[in-house]
Amino acid sequence: MNALVYARYELVRTFRNRRFFVFSLGFPLALYYLTATANRHEQNLGGSGISAPLYLMVGLAAFGSMNAMLATGARIAGERGVGWNRQLRLTPLSTRTYFRVKVLTAYVTALLTIVLLYAAGTTLGVRLGALDWAKMTALILVGLVPFAAIGVLMGHLLTTQTIGPAMGGTTALLGFLGGVWFPITGGAMQKVAEALPSYWLVQASHVGLGGSGWSSTGWAVVAAWSLAAAVLARRVYRRDTQRV
Amino acid sequence: MTTGIELRALAKTFRTPTGPVEAVRGVDIAVAAGETVALLGPNGAGKSTTIDLLLGLQRPDGGTVTVFGRSPEAAVDHGRIGVMLQAGGLLRELSVRELVTMMRALHPRPLPVEETLALARLEAIADHRTEKLSGGQQQRVRFALALVGDPDLLVLDEPTVGLDVEARQAFWATVRDLAQRGKTVLFATHYLEEADSFADRVVLMAHGRVVADGPPTEIKAMVGSRTIRATLPAAPLEQLETLPGVTAAERRGDGVVLACSDSDRAIRALLLAQPQARDIEITGAGLEQAFLQLTGEEVLAA
Image 1: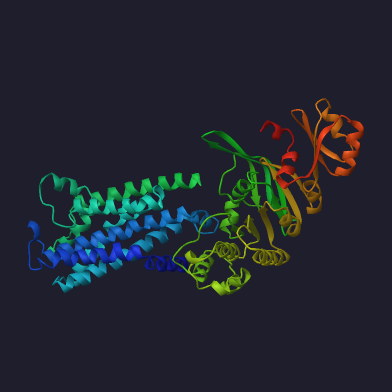
Image 2 (image 1 turned 90 degrees about the horizontal axis):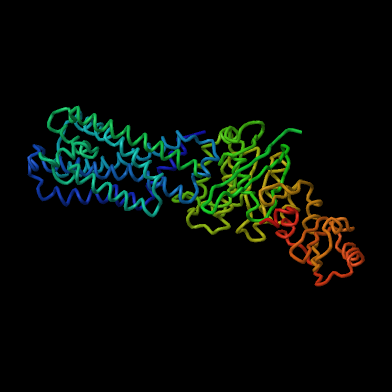
């Protein structure tokens, strides 16, 4: 068995999907230029201490990569919708490899989104050291773990008809409350935001300030979401396949 | 004789809003390696459920399944079973060749892609996107996906639905060729002709049970029989059943229905024994009809 060949075609499929280009690449990129161009010289966006181009670059990279991760769910729901999961169960492909390939695909597409937004960021004057770029990317990739599990969870819970709006709603809400569009500082909003995984994705931009990026709260929140979503995804997957 | 498939006392009940449905109730089927067996029966006979149980897609409530001496899951994991499911779409956003290549990568000892495409006669449409294929073309792609792992057992659930006559013939020619190479083939169909022409043996199912199991000629004689209906209020069934040419008798109100192996002899004997019989009809039993008769009293209960 050659899982790499299988994964390659899974990727090919994703890149041929129009929805992927619109929501995971086009949308975040357009929104970035729309929001960041006007205040490209703002060095302290909303009191965050971070420049607008950097803050919004990471914010929209977070938004786009969240979308890319959750798009796994749309693919799973689509495959379930046409009975493809039955076909796969009749091949030597193990469940573990199936999910690994799904998550790998999600990460490749998320990384593409991130790199695209980085490139856009540099056109608006974002400048970071190589190490900071790497640290920031690493934080975002870790911060996406819960979204990988949420994607799988949604894919087994929802149908092709319902998953589109559900994904759109989830990313919009988590993006808004996590501070994708503007920094959240102080008050009850801050408390809510800190409990969300999307907030910590956006907070990866703090690397640009020379710090380590996440507080211990950040690591704990991301770990808790990862664990909870993974446990739920596993349970829903089991229930779903038993019924087939 | 090496055992290919062994199903013993297989049972499966589904819970539905209108109460439990016993889809499969005590099915015993043994298929030798290299044999081509047809699973014949009308819709709702339990063929698809039996196939799901055979493949490990569903767990039986009772009984056991072995495929080449292993559990179905193990046989699937070793790439020994190739399956053409009855329904279901194909993965989108890939060409036929890409999809076959992708699925080929999952198998331990697959066939070359081009050979698979040729066997399923897909060369001409190999570069077409799967979402743009006709129903018959999709069916051929499903066939290719069943073959690409070079399995020892081919399971085909209603494989020719949606195929035109020419495609049907080509399909069966390929299956026969594969059977000659030593593959075990189990296919479900509700076409008697297909079972008759392409199987070494026919297993007849109705109401979740195996009602007959034998060479096609034998089954054809049973299923291709005629039926005599007559209004005959007083005649005892036991006596009617013993008439020459009659294989089974059942009562429906004032009427009786006689399943016949030789309706000419049966009608003569009936008129001699029961001169008061009226409203007599002799019909060639359709497959559905024949199945119902073969299942005896359960039909009356239903």
